[in-house]
Image (cartoon, rainbow, N blue to C red; front, side, top):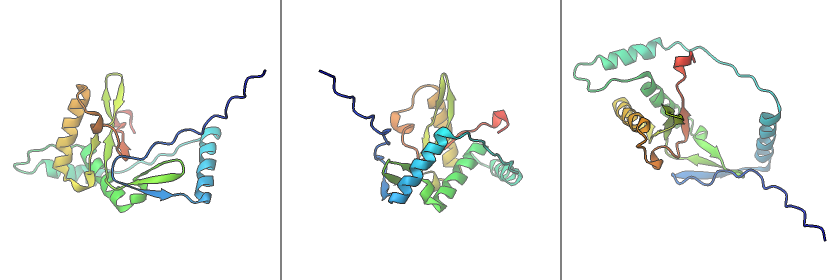
Amino acid sequence: AAAPAPAAPAPAAAAGAPTAPHREVALSNMRKVIAKRLTEAKQTIPHFYLSVDVELDALLKLRADLNGRKGADYKLSVNDLVIKAAAIAIRQNPAVNAYWGGDKVYELLDIDVSVAVAIDGGLITPIVRRADQKGLSTISAEMKDLATRAKAGKLKPEEYQGGGFSISNLGMYGI
């Protein structure tokens, strides 16, 4: 007797529902087809990428002014300002704070920004939770603490799992 034919492979598993506060958005048939076609295109068509140079003179001046305040107990980095700017942009455009769930989109209600930190053997992305609701000095202090503990291997899983937006600084490579 012939062995039964193997079952067709299951579609790639979509990420499960987030544990963070979110809203599920059902997809229309049209959006499902668009998503399928975009996935096929990404997998089968060569891609090229574009870049843009950005003048950060005003941001660098703001950083210098804030860091130069008398009595300031912080030292802001460019990354701190980028984290805050990204969080504000996400708050203004909440549809980007989402991820694909197969047949639905999960729109995250909190703005949790992951920031890539180099560690031995790779990268880890600790999360600044609710970054849109925090001031720059708080973001700076949290990021310094998270980066220090990440490099020491001391982060808890909830401190690096579940962010809705990621920032990776490749400035040392001219990016």
